Image 1 (tube, rainbow, N blue to C red):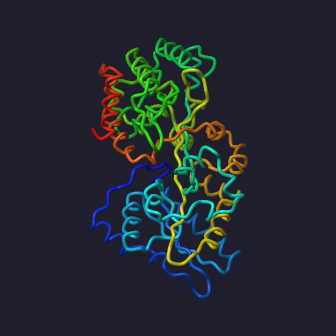
Image 2 (image 1 turned 90 degrees about the horizontal axis):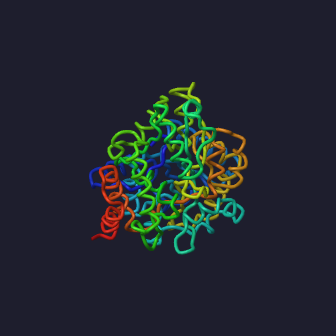
Image 3 (image 1 turned 90 degrees about the vertical axis):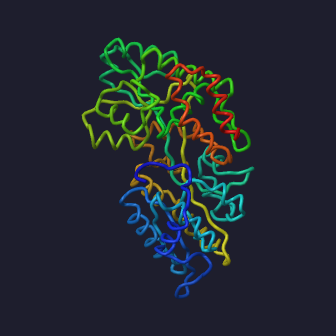
Length: 413
């Protein structure tokens, strides 16, 4: 996975798992030493072509400062990593430290150390509060927020000037006014991707913007009155002709390319969108602003991957803590995050990277981040139902009935 965050585990098959296990770079966390040094097995996901090199440099620098600890690195693709870790756990050869998206299943099986056992209190306190909460189950934090992505409104400054719009909209009323002006100027106002790629993200923007949301670890609230209001606003935007044609069959990635080529007035994007504009259309005059909400309250959809530490036969918590505290130190951590094009999850990291004007709008929104209820066991079903059904808003489906149908799927009915 390059420059994006992946949600939802892949389903393992015996053949794939067996082949992957045979190709792994270490045998698991049951042992403890190598030439007198304690060995840590680190499995990470590949975010770009440079991920392995970046981790190798971090490990080299860490080992130079800690001769009593050796770190074995295993870099896996996002296509394989879920299969690999499942197979390792079945063989009782899980790594000491893992970088992946979801952690709730491991915590439920009592495989993980609580976060307080594997980093110092200073490191723990440095995480943004919203990300700490998202990394916790029943008040206990298990995941260490690793990297973050957030959403913001990208807008075409030339289109805004042509349509006589002086500033990006903050409220839904201002959004509708701007969209009407863009449409009158012959510009497609807004890109609304409700295709299967990531319909749940676009939908979340309007649900949370209405004061609603998807719920929490205990209960999903797809058909709440606030969400019905958000879906009604989505339908209104579509029926008034403020979106591209057929939003229900449009995916985010190709639609962002349409914005990048200067053919949309507004679309919600991510931090890597900045780099994509630089690569594909550097002459595009664009701005980044908070996502408009019903009343103008600040909000962003947050996504975070995590680091976590597994309990193994040998207690390695002291060595794990040294390594993770080193990784999350400001200079080491921000260098890694910057190289991969994401956002930091720590307060010190946000302060250090705040001078970068291309990501500052996202950093400013992180304290107001809302997250998918990924620790809810029914979220996967809910997400699938949203992806397959929410596009019906563009076909005249009644919002209240549609959300009730999605809620029923989420509840297993």
